[in-house]
Amino acid sequence: MLVSQSAPLGATTYEKWTVQDISQVLKPQLLDDLGPGYAWTRFVSASEISYWSIESIVRISISGGSEVPVATPCNGLFGLSWSPDGTALAYLTDSSDASRGEVHVVSGGEDRILAMVAPFPTDEICSEDVCRDYDTQLRFSADGKKLAMVAGDITTSVRVWSLDGQAVFSQDAPAGAGPGEIQAWSVWAGDDLYFRDVNGIERWRNGSLALVLPGVGWRTPTASPDGAHIAYMALDSTGSFHIYIVDTTTLQVTDVASSRAWPLFLSARYLEYGETVDCPNGPCGPGITYVYDMQTGSETGWNFDYAYDAWPRTV
Image (cartoon, rainbow, N blue to C red; front, side, top):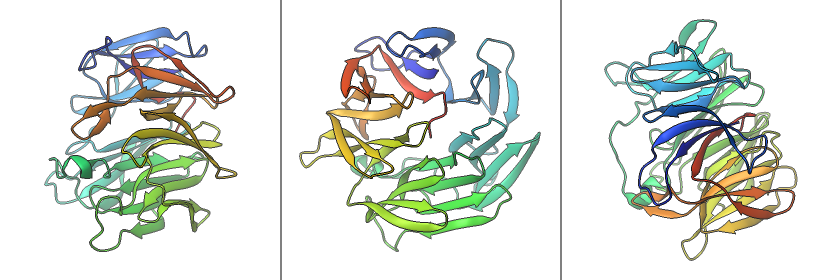
């Protein structure tokens, strides 16, 4: 299944959110029309989605019904992630006085602060080119036992916690590090955490860190549900974005498409991405979207939808 944003061809803004059945990828079937105005829309499970509604994070059945409040971020929402089994929600917010950032975990009806970090910026703090290299993400591992925050726009740091709040991995950027030199753009593939730093792509596995893709400056990495592949976009020497796929076992990298951006795995077989549309802070949409078939190596034009989240879970 797929949560997507829709827009007529040539439009400059997205008009509505939809949930679609993509069991037949090239013939998606509409399950729910959410309308406009939603943010942080995510799958909770195969039957529920969640989103930020005015002041609260709520969940709702895909088949309809009433919104169920889950959490009320204190001062803004800067990241959100559901555990693979849908029993725990993690989110990033600032304290009421904006003196610190807070990592919250909601489970069993309890909202608790897992960790405190530097406050999150509420205003744009970077120029056009720099913004492309800053990113903050909060993600559960595939087993749901660890939570990672890669905060490229606040403390330029990587943190991994167990769900009891114990820090199991920590790394900070070198003093004075600039764009492209900080930690950013993370993704779990199985229980391995990958992220970008000044050296390229690092992999954290069972407490050990290894440089696995030297010199690679990826953005928007997405892992297949089985963790076997990671797709990402990166610039070539001429400044054009390409879509690349790396095999997480062999670390072999394949260049699958040029002038394309914003990949998202729809399943272990299919990958969605869009044509590059120039915007002030880098490539964006709406633009024509495509589906790439991992088995045949072929690209097929899709519909007018921009994929935002998919189920089975991609991370």
